[in-house]
View 1 (spheres, rainbow, N blue to C red):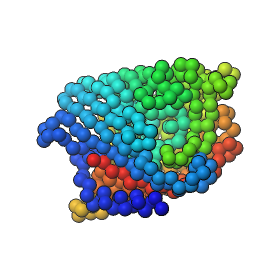
View 2: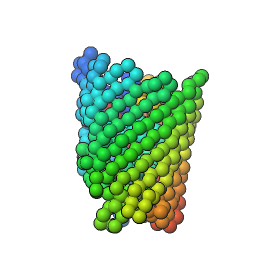
View 3: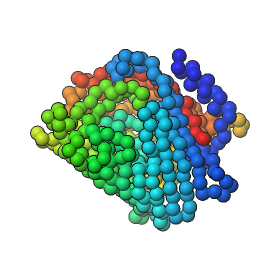
View 4: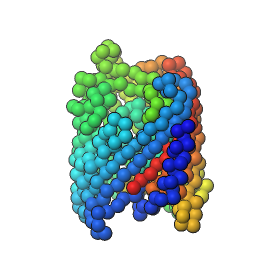
Length: 380
């Protein structure tokens, strides 16, 4: 079975990987005081499932991500170039940034400011993937002007973008598809407890190409199980869309919880239609670690082991759970709710091993499915 290969790979990595200083994965400098950093992040996934969306093959394994990045950082300026060599390949973060007191401004391709889980550190999600509504509603990296600034206790993040470097026309991130995005968040911190509250909005013009929205099983390796084509060829071309979302996160010691909900409204020839999605997540670190809040980005960082494997401990062990709801009616007759349970072992800061079970209960066109996934994640 493919999962055995991943387990063997994980055993090798956990015994040889160095710990990172303060990152989701390790970075190696070209010199002791060099501003240049070379880094990488690899996800090796194996998933078994039953139900629709598995392309006739119930056992799938592949590199979900093989990202390599080069970064330059100085006191005021930064540059990054990242590429994912897995599967068909795609550009990741690519651009220039200038920092000022309380914020930054940059031009290039970066994550759009939307969703606490999607906007968080790469490889830090509680499940193998972010909640399904984030991909169904077209959240991802976009090319354009990005900025962040703080006004008292509120962090503002905004982007004016025009497509992305790799996505096709019907994705909502194709060339010529203009988007205006804004996220605002605040945090209340007291006695090792953090409450994050935020909201985001996006206006998107599809530039005559329309869009296809849909959802699949809880792995990027599986096919979509349901989709709605809002393009001219299907007689209901979407001209524009408005995305509105709210998010909350709470960290208290070893406990973490988050909740998100989003509304995606499209402008169709017959009138506006709206679909909805959301997720509720919870985790507990059995070994006592906390998810630390990053006030500069308005996100929570993944668990870092207090005592790494090989340094007098066994690493961090985290139990995770999620309820994931997606309602695509009236575009598609149906909705579904998925329940996920998992365990994440972080033997060293730059290595994670995740096991995840997902069970989806659908109605109408949304099918039932279940899957068991395993990921070995390694940064260097």
